[in-house]
Length: 153
Length: 153
DNA sequence: TGAGGATAGTTGTTATAACGAATATTGTCA
DNA sequence: TGACAATATTCGTTATAACAACTATCCTCA
Image (cartoon, rainbow over all chains, first blue to last red; front, side):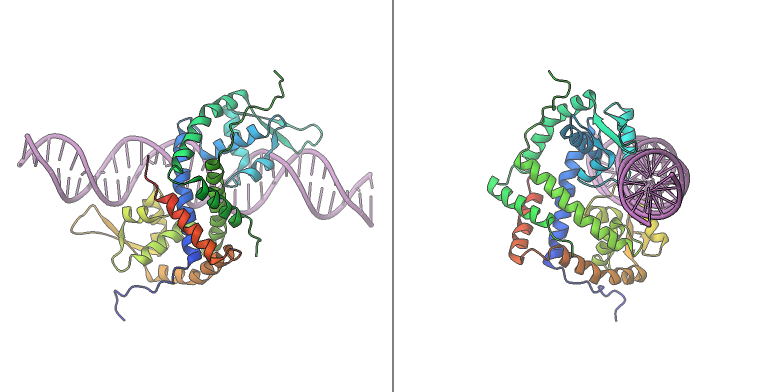
């Protein structure tokens, strides 16, 4: 055996290739979006929370409900919301009927900040998929749905 | 105007839906993989580095080269590699011809650790896409390639 | 009614990520 | 050659993520 022999590598399966392609594509797209919202002083997670809370108006959502709806589930919702509350983007109020629950709502400031990002984000996504036909985008959308809706083994 | 009016939300475009679906799918798959390699005491990034370095044997790679090949580019390669070197998974040596460059190689320990994960990771990916036909996987693979190879506007 | 368990959220701690500035080395060209 | 830009990596600092333990409140049912 040579000391410089290439270590045996497992064959790359189709599944493996799709896995990697999926993660790389997502990371590239997410990076661009992250950069965009960073100009408004937001992280991707914070932007995501704001959008969720706008969609949850006027009722607001409990801490857990936000976590469930997030793209990538954040295990430390409390302090994520702490920072956003400190900046006046959201407001929290403990429920009177069930005092365990803290309902979070987006503030007018949060809403107006979010509004300034709506068009730029839409434009970014248009650019990100500009080279793909609507038909192929639809197929991609369906396939991704299929990936997500798999039954856990 | 009502105080409880729903804030106006921008219409959700097809591009937007695909963006979100892509990120959610990637996150779900990545989470499972992360859990798997965590059993071996590795983070996803560390596992990724080990695979890259196995593929780069016997030459090894400079710090920057590893970063370029990673799924999600880590801006702090130095300390990521520091931790791995401390655990004996990799070894670093400054080049003599260009003393700016530090070449990193995987150690036999790193290789054997990686080897114990090969089969479990392959099995996981098989399970993750078990419900999809090879034909549809191929289409997905091609579409993702199309996403990644877009020309920057 | 009251003990045990479930649920919602918080907090402490440690490790890692993110960002920028700094160091060292090499290439370029006036 | 010697100043200046480019390249490769490291370091200092701050913010955030990850994990686990903890508090408070509510629910169930013997």
